[in-house]
Image 1 (cartoon, rainbow, N blue to C red):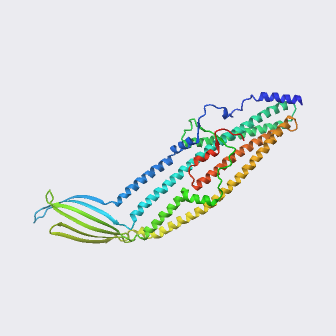
Image 2 (image 1 turned 135 degrees about the horizontal axis):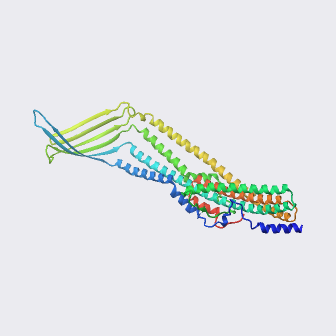
Image 3 (image 1 turned 90 degrees about the horizontal axis):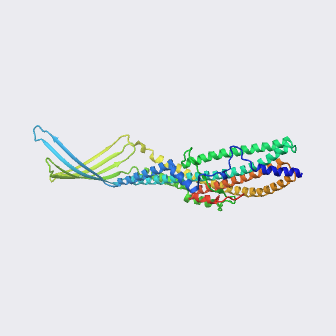
Length: 477
């Protein structure tokens, strides 16, 4: 027994200096690694987002068009010059010249112009909400990738640690097999465990590289350029930051703060205005036009005149009508008065079903809002249940971890006394490492679920939540 223990101690000393297998690196010993914190990562992603950039440009264009649209409320000014030369065989030739200055003002349109401007304003507001939603989605994606990379880094460190432990046990078992102290089957069991650990470590590194590629792409880094890695560690003491479990609280919060709720309400309001305008489409547009003229045969023109008219446009479906009346005066001896009435047959047909279409669109949007609220209530309740279940599971996992650590200590002592086989001790160590990895993944999942709940409810400043789960210093599990 003494000879066996001495042999093991010598092997441990020798194996502790062995290098890691090809393809596996210890990130804690690498130097010159580019790092980035979460705030800088989010700012880079926002600056690099082409979708957000073009959405912002389109929003500015829409705002400019809205400002231009207010011009329709102002009078329309017109300036004209006219010259008419005619030859009369039995009378003197005519060379009439005229200058005109006109102003036309819309005085009534049943609120159509105001409604159009209001619809534009509502659409801009909805677009701005959608832009903010896209921005929040991008921020959430960056936060998730950032924390996933930290999780993979710590997962890989745990796997590397258990691999190093298994390597020591493997080398000891190899010498024990050569000395005939263990059977070939026992040696193959440990060798197989080593291969499984290598496969798991390789799979983790491959998954980490894929996540890092997505992270680099969203930040705007070229594939061949050095990619910064996140800083910080998963906080093992994290138990969640949401304490409110009343679903009505979150529903009421969402009604007030959720961008999607606000956008849907704006849509219903806009469609309600559209229906109101469709119901009064038979009311005419009324405008006034006043024109001043100077005319004569030679310059300077000496014959002043004016005209004043009223125009009526009835946008009646299938037969829109235009009517006008005008009075005028050209010189002291000439006055005029005119009337006109006309219409276009089978025109403006799109207005025939305008009220029905407006009612249908409004009813559909209102029902979608009700369905959305119903689904949202269910999703909130489901999220709160999942959070509670996840927190309970985390507590059980921590209790299990404490028991498993004690069990490994006992197994280690039994191995030194020769009461158990080396493979049994190694399996205990592997099981403990897998439990630590499971705990890290559950911590990240709990955080992701809580942030998703905040996003659903319209809570701003998601970036501030990461401080709950990320610490600057590593805390052992």
